[in-house]
Structure formats: structure tokens, C-alpha cells
Image 1 (tube, helix red, strand yellow):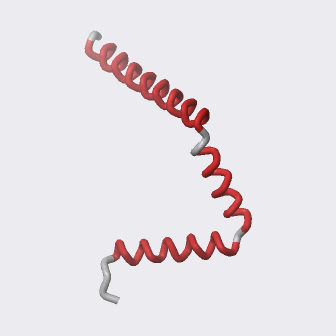
Image 2 (image 1 turned 90 degrees about the horizontal axis):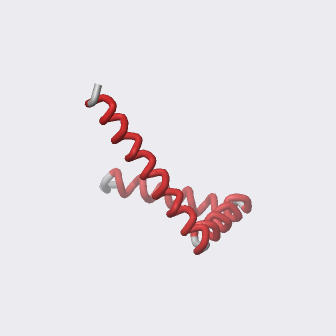
Image 3 (image 1 turned 90 degrees about the vertical axis):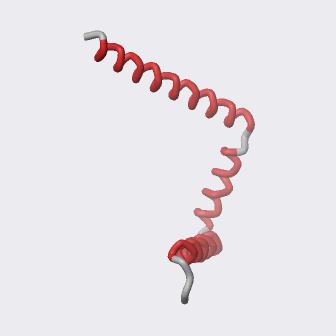
Length: 72
């Protein structure tokens, strides 16, 4: 075949995924539960708040680290 490597990898990925979802009940259940969790409105809100909190902590820690290094 004369197709780019990216397309070949994508086709191989989808072939594997479709076969796995067709044959394995546990994988189907895992995908179903993950979909339900990620699309739950209150859980999305909590996840967003956690992300904002983590990011603000990371940024403030980096700023304090730079300040303590500069002020020494």
C-alpha cells in the first residue's frame, strides 16, 4: 500500500478497537461507564473546579519558588 504512515496507524488502531469492542464485554462495560461519568453534569463541574484549584496551586507555587530564588 502506498499510504502515509499516519493513515496506516489510524486504520490499525480502529481495526483493533472495533474488534476489541465486538469481542470483549468488559471493555464495552468500561467504555459505557466512562462515557456516563464524563458526561454527568455535576461531575464535570467538580472536575473543572479541581482543575482550576490544581492549576492555581501550581502557578502560585512556581511564583513563590521564583520569588524566593530572586530575593536571596
